[in-house]
Image (cartoon, rainbow, N blue to C red; front, side, top):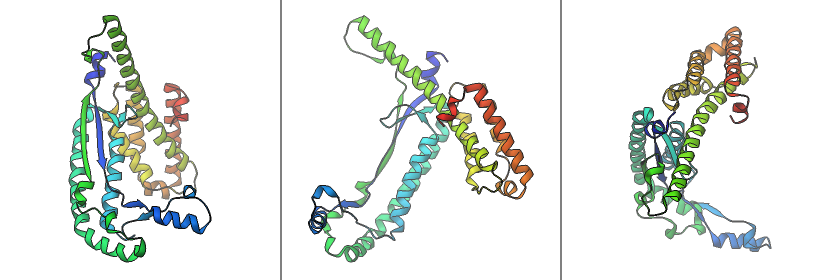
Length: 290
């Protein structure tokens, strides 16, 4: 992959989600507990739940936001530890469609929560009793939640526009390009690791005749094989071949694998063949990292 390819095949994306957990540290109760047990405040903290346990609208919203983060990671590749991920251009349309639908659902779920919020607060007043405080409850719920996505180009060494010596600029540019090169290599390795981990799980469960497995074992493999068609940054033909073989492997229905021992063991053996091919192509280290 050339330097130009690295900057035209992908962009950087950051999913930003902020949400109120409705948990609050209660210093007064923590102090009372410490006093009752003859210890110090540093020994523990009491965090109270500000909403009742049966707050379905709140739980649905928080579950959706957590799932949105999971989907974001599934549709992108690693870049840095500060929230930015690498998004291949080939996956841009699918990713933006996922985000658009996810934000639309989040807006709807937030509206449901806001509508039920007064009743939740009323229930909490009874449940928390002496620990209840109006000051713990924000009036503008909508302001406590936000979601959005940002995009940036993959940096280039020539992006710097500062007045420093040319030799120093050359060093910075070279380091930037090396970082990008390493990031692309790591991202491609992540795609390989995902496939290795997926096939390993299939083999592990199916090779044991009595092992119980969920439908998601096969469903997750199908989803991964689909997204890997767009996450293969380097157009690695070896990875594509292994992906296709895994895709064929995942055509077996979970119910068939449970009911037919012969097909189950045949599928497990095919999974092992894929794992052997991955070891031959990428080395055994791919499994220690999977």
